[in-house]
Length: 313
Image (cartoon, rainbow, N blue to C red):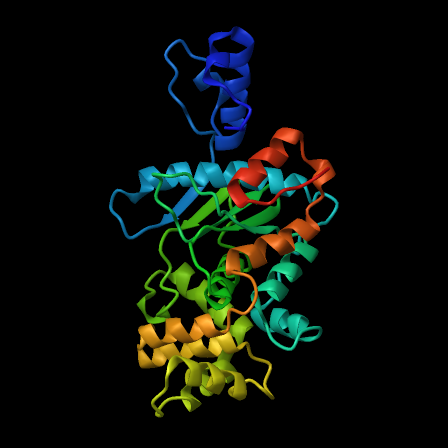
């Protein structure tokens, strides 16, 4: 709820109605279900798909999906003037990105998505007590919106998540009558070999092609053999990328998948974090593209609470 909200206000008819409207909008809940004599929140109809490793995951993920849906509707309104791109192959997307960037990085990928009408944010302020999925994508009308939720500081890992969700979108996995939601609860970012779902395999292939494909794989393999410290591994990755259109973070992450030395991989990734953490990178790009004037004061407040982005109309 907004910081200005006081529970005592709900004792008055007007205050109660305001509370009900806020909850309905923010959680994609039917307003009528909150106004019943015995309130029983009912989510508005959506087509939801949950990729979960927990047998009881769908109940909590339904709440997660509704939070995401409410945020997605708001973000879609903030870019109405920008038609979303219909489709693009992974190879063409990589070519587009490398036309203006030396490698496919988290900020360049997010910037491309926003420029092509595909909002993407990091949900930093995830509600306490609610299972945190890795990421989700929601279709509002014809516009896909991507939300990364995973707590992660390394840009290379979140670049993979963003590319993976974009792979779902471009592979047609959100095709439904309306309001399609796809929630990836736990993606094996560190080991794509564990994928068994056809959609996940397709989205992973899209992501890996965008991030470097065969060139990335061969470069990672070329680093196998020597004994590294975290510093020398980071230096070796940077050297390997010197004349190649690859991100050093992806090279380290790929080396980790091949060597399975995740302790060293994680420490080496930290050496590359000389600027902002990954969630801040995503949301700084978003802040530069969001039309704050298209959002209500309540919308800006809600966005700030979920993403830590402070917008001024």
